[in-house]
Image (cartoon, rainbow, N blue to C red; front, side):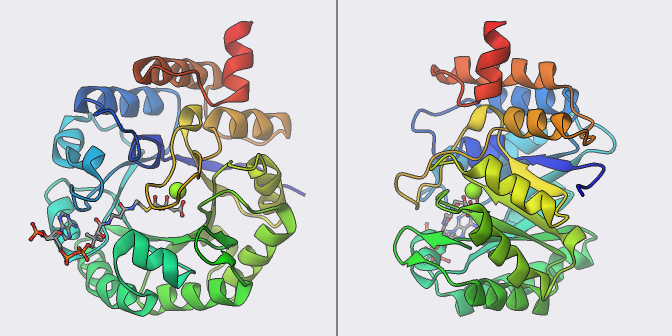
Amino acid sequence: NYPARVRLIDVGPRDGLQNEKQPVPAAVKIELVHRLQAAGLWEIEVTSYVSPKWVPQMADNHAVMAGITRQPGVRYSVLTPNLKGFEAALADRPDEIVVFGAASEAFSQKNINCSIAESIERFAPVVEAARKAGIAVRGAMSCTVGCPYEGDIAPERVGMLARLMKGIGVQRVDVADTIGVGTPLKVQRAIEATLAHYDIDHISGHFHDTYGQALANTLAALQMGVWNFQSSVAGLGGCPYAKGATGNVATEDVVYLLHGLGIDTGIDLEALADTGAWISERLGRPTGSRVGRALLAK
Ligand code: HMG
Ligand code: MG
């Protein structure tokens, strides 16, 4: 019993490129966004307003946001870890901002330089300001199954973070497997813990594919009724504060799975695969999408 339609949020321009060592020109990021929306993506995570010392690749956030031609009906989201980031983002009028916390204390420290409790204190005024400005708020929850520093993460910790996110007014949350160590039952337990605080329409799956489990985890989440997922064209990416973690599950691969199940995505798989091939070529590496490779070889 699967959802009839699924909304995919392509995080390639942000999660996909943030860890890229070579500087990617803003013009390439802008074209990537344009190609994704032309392929039928409803939601695109464009950039982040974080410290350029921590993540140099996202330092061109203003140029990228100013450079995109927005398509009506498409939602453009950006990451904002604190008020400073939010204020910078506000000028660029994102449709949604993302605060990002973790179910692991160690990861919270490494990624955003504060404890989980402190992160919530930082997010609270950001959420309030965003809601006042009519901007939607999503909360990313990292390390919901495993942490590169702490190992396995218990579902209770995920539930605790979801409760805190809810408490400050975050409207929907991502259950993220940051380092791609999850397997279907573990992911289902993390989602179950989140369901104590958010309904199924406000939970999305964010699966990295390090251990090749992301599609299985996607299917497991679909079986629970989750119908929002983040993925990255060509499987780009990795988190700079999660050593060894590979990219998100490739959007092409998820679309192939969904269409095979008869689930509507509104996405043109061929145009998407072309986009994956295009950006991979720009980065000088083969696509990380199995489906993209197969379609290319046809
Ligand atoms: P901090 O050092 O604790 O911040 O960093 P601070 O408030 O003490 O400020 C220190 C300096 O940073 C100051 O500059 C601030 O102005 C500046 P200085 O006086 O030294 O020149 N600063 C900023 N600059 C630009 N934008 C800002 C900002 N805030 C402070 N917003 C901070 C805290 C969060 C900023 C830092 O730790 C940071 O930037 N971290 C980067 C985190 C990141 O981008 N991680 C990757 C994204 S999360 C992810 O990929 C996971 C996800 O995909 C889900 C999953 O897979 O798990 C979402
Ligand atoms: Mg991620």
